[in-house]
Length: 111
Image (tube, rainbow, N blue to C red):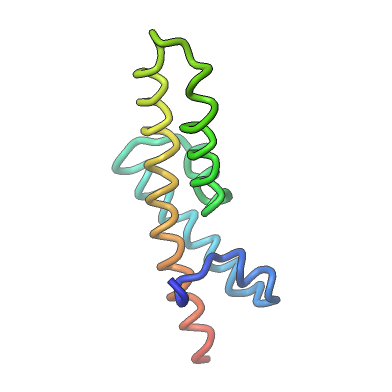
């Protein structure tokens, strides 16, 4: 994972061109994949793109502490909603954004 850094890494290290291009490409690809194949909303795409690795922490907070506050009759439905609208987009976005950012960084390091 050393080579597969987030676009936020390039933003904070001053390589904003790489960060902005990779965020744009990630948004377009995530929109095509998540909206085209899985019929997610645009909000799932934006949330997955902006949260990146922090999304896994939010998922852990839900599983560890917030899930216990959900009434027992609604646990299965709530888990299905969280899985479908939050966990899947975060996982897909995490893998795709790291790969696209790696490719963009490679292209701009050779030019």
